[in-house]
Image (cartoon, rainbow, N blue to C red; front, side, top):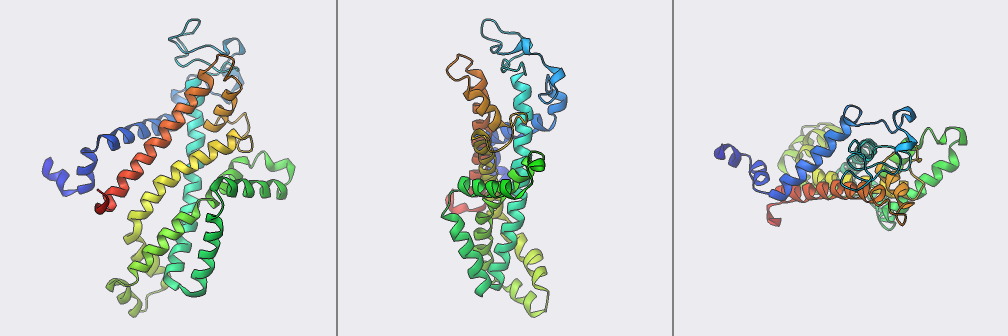
Length: 301
């Protein structure tokens, strides 16, 4: 068993990294809970018939006046907090992963092309990236969200909130992928296998996506984990500000925004439980990102 682990260095390092193992366990637990929320959750936050207003504002099970049925209490609408968090995590992860996929495809594609072709195309892509880097990601997402609100008809804006929010987050995160892919492509362009493929007359797209891309996946995977945490935080921030998802879509950011209304009224669990859940999720993903960075760059160990 030890010989097998040593053969795969990344797995060996993972087994000997308690922080990475705990982070992976927590992230996997949250992911499983989010995926199977319809079967695990006590109530469906989207279904008004599954909960009652008479159960509203019940404290967690360890406090006086609680109902053991609701382990972490209920919100003002009588929705079970665990159920709301599971569905909220589900929506936040769907938006985060979708935005990450769009940002990765766009950023890696532009970065590969900029590094391969260079010249004017490289200059244009990098100047656009530089301009976007001058703005915080939250401001970029706010700008794109505002443009979408102005362009789309009012009748369909509510139906497209998830799609608009996902696109806004994606367009605010593509720069990291583009810059990383471009820098890594410059390094690979000097390698013999790339020069041989060029001399053989292979199509540039084949050289970029078949030969170069597999050899630069290491740093891109690190960027993916970091940007996934950023995407989830961006969604939570936008929803908290009231310009992300509406109140009837219980993402983690929406739950925290609703909980802020009860911060000073004594119902602390409505705010702090979703907040701690979000913190655990983001920190776990960031720890895994740090671990992957150490695996792919031994000089940082």
